[in-house]
Amino acid sequence: MDQLIRFWERITSIQIIDILIAVGIVVFFRVLSSTFSYMIIRIFKIKSKRAKDIKESAFFKPLKIFFIILGIYLAIVFLKEPLQINNYIMDVVTKTFKIISVVEIAVGLANSFTSKSTLGKKIRKTLSQKMDDTVFEFVLKIVRVLIYIIAIFLVLAILEINLTGLVAGLGIGGVIVTLAAQDTAKNLFGGLVIFIDKPFVVGDCIEMGDYEGTIEDITFRTTRVRSYENALINIPNAVIADASVINWSKMEKRRYKTNLCVELDTPLEKLELLKSRIEKMLQDRESVYDDSIIVRFDQITDNGINILIYTYTNSVSYASYLKEVEDINMKIMKILKEEHIELAYDTKTVYVKN
Image 1 (cartoon, rainbow, N blue to C red):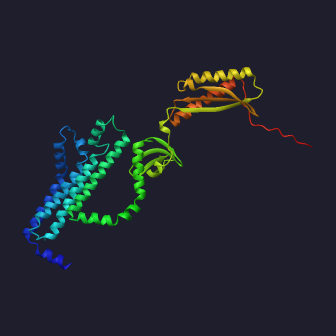
Image 2: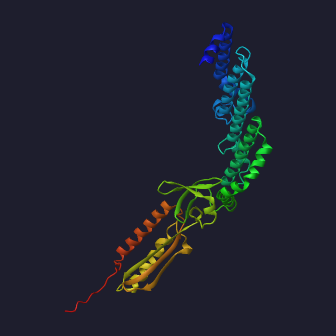
Image 3: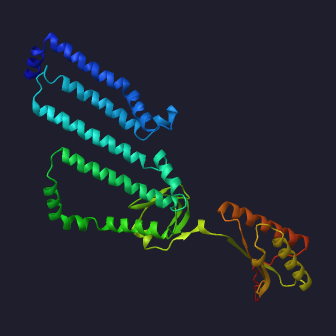
């Protein structure tokens, strides 16, 4: 507290003017940070003429923050002599400014390598026939990780940390790190297997053991699945790599199968007519594959005569498939009613001895 009082006592009217100028520098860069960022991006993005596109650029916000920090840094440098700021504090300020600059550049570069960025869209357009969306997203994530790793090493260099000693220290603790990272390594390898084998991509509906839902994202470590109850499930990639995965989205057609059990006393003529009408009804449907239609009298059961109806439909999505099944069932019931054929029910005759 006493040091602070003595500090204010040393401030002269000239120093007050210097402080006001420093404040003016900070305000100047703060107010014009957006303008400076806009101008720099405009120089490098000659083809883009819309202000909205430039402001949505990956570098716009990082540059804006950089110019604000630059204004603060220049203000402190300006006040070094008037306020007699010692070299140690200036060294800390300079290193802080350099670290923030490196971080903002890294953020800007990383944001440039996303599927929604301008650069990402251009790269995707170039590789449209050579790489699917899931692999492309994975490659972009690797690029972003590499950018941040390089940024970390630059920050360590600015802080003058001995990287040789750091690497040696990692070598000493390598065994511990390896043991602790076994599961992570398995998940990373599992993620690599998923991207190579491509059992599914983002947007596919899958079923795997107790898990069922839609793929939302595939990361280095886990795969995110949105269940049909709208819960988000994070499944380790190592688990997926060792499991049997059913990809419902890869279906080219869905099977329709049902059994009609009609009464035993149904006349054979009506049975033949029933079969032919059901088969004709299925053939008339555009969604049904004609070569897959099977309508056969296949069993005589204790309760009645069983007719197997079997075919495939091109209604692949679950909702459209249910609608297709409902429509077929309704038409079958209508045919049964028109032909006055009754379905058999599971019955038992019980004799009571007096």
